Length: 160
Image (tube, one colour):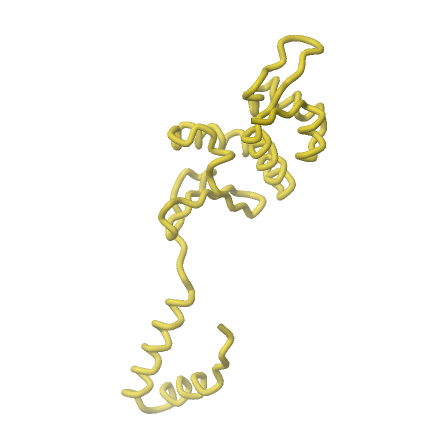
């Protein structure tokens, strides 16, 4: 297993040496191989540590504040204790304001900020279902509404 000192971590991940030191001193992301034990001692990081640092860097680049990330990480460590290191073992989505975690159920996404699930909805299935319903109703209906449905159906183009 390869270990990485702070200078290597800084170059690989793209964060300053001071930022790495700050995150360690605050207990946010600590080196798992060797902690600093006073002035002048080296911190040594594992590859898993690099992944965690890179996730935090990317999340901050996307607009999430360190405070939000810290709160989310605290919640994830409690809620996903079996993962050990949630930053390096879970899959994330963000819009710059909120942090979402993909779960094993592809239709459930955890909004970590609000600590509740949001659900994904496959638009492809919805469109197919709606098209079938439109055809069924248009075939049984008459009048202006059915003509409009047939007109819209006639203008459809294949895009997917």
